Length: 329
Image 1: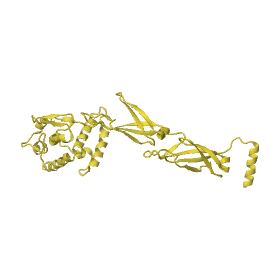
Image 2: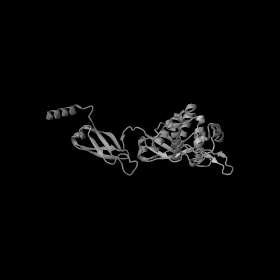
Image 3: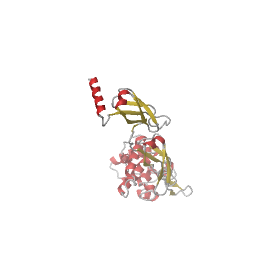
């Protein structure tokens, strides 16, 4: 029977806390999931090992027992002992019990017969089932027992479905107003997803229970919509603020006046003071994007003035510009 180093499998230290263990598990599970590695048997086996390691290290009671076993096993191994000679009976849990041990030495072959073969229920190893077969009911691990006959009978493990992600592209106007998307999957399932006002690229929208279906009565996972807001021809977005450029003719820039500014939802008049320089920046408060958490509040709109020069001047206009130049000399 091969002894498993679950800490090494997840790549964590033996003093890692629950948060670090869960983080390592999620990272590795995503990397080696069969859906990501179709047809890759080595990745499938690695995925099973990762799940088994987390089944133990993610459960405080199993982890405590595993750590106790590990300390004794290290002493036994350093003394030159062989796995087949190790007294497994002190670690084997009585079917249906919690921590009760057998009174005789049980061989690995007997354990394989008792716990359903070499791979075990749900793909767990002989090592796992030797140590934790009787503890499986505590976490719905798929090890059930017949209370009348005392014989072990396996039940399919209830597993929650995976969380899934799906990218949706929307326009800036849709991000401003809020919108919906109809998602259709290959199996014919249709989801109507509501996208709230104020979302930005990278926003995650959680649709509870719309992810991968659970197994053996387990809950379905969640679906996360990852929003991508498409670039806009007029506005550039910075958080909840918008930026744009507005052309202003030379005469208005010099003498002052008003120009019409088309914001994302309406038109407003912007007052241009006399002698406004090119690239002058104006802030129009509350005319940006809605705030995602407070959609009744908005960011600002920043308007950059781009002064335009007159084209195709007449002879008289050139003469007047010449006089102006003389006056300014």
